[in-house]
Length: 73
Image 1 (cartoon, rainbow, N blue to C red):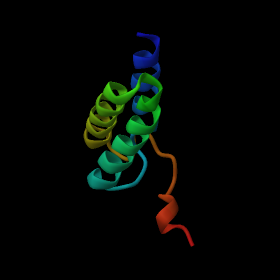
Image 2: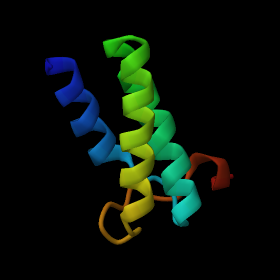
Image 3: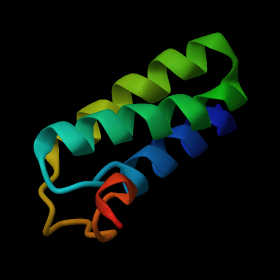
Image 4: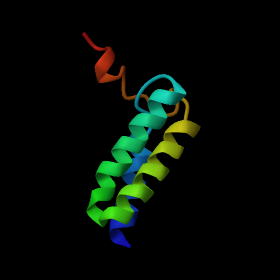
């Protein structure tokens, strides 16, 4: 249960990377899946789903971590 709480919190905090909805959903899913590794295979799936959903429903103004690293140069 503790691992799930960590996954959900981390996914929610980091899901808004990027400026477009797609950027945020994809990066949120990736971050959630990475953190979900703590919970094993089910944690990866849950983390990816929660992170992707959180990224898709947030706007850039809600959580702004700057430009995505792939757009920096």
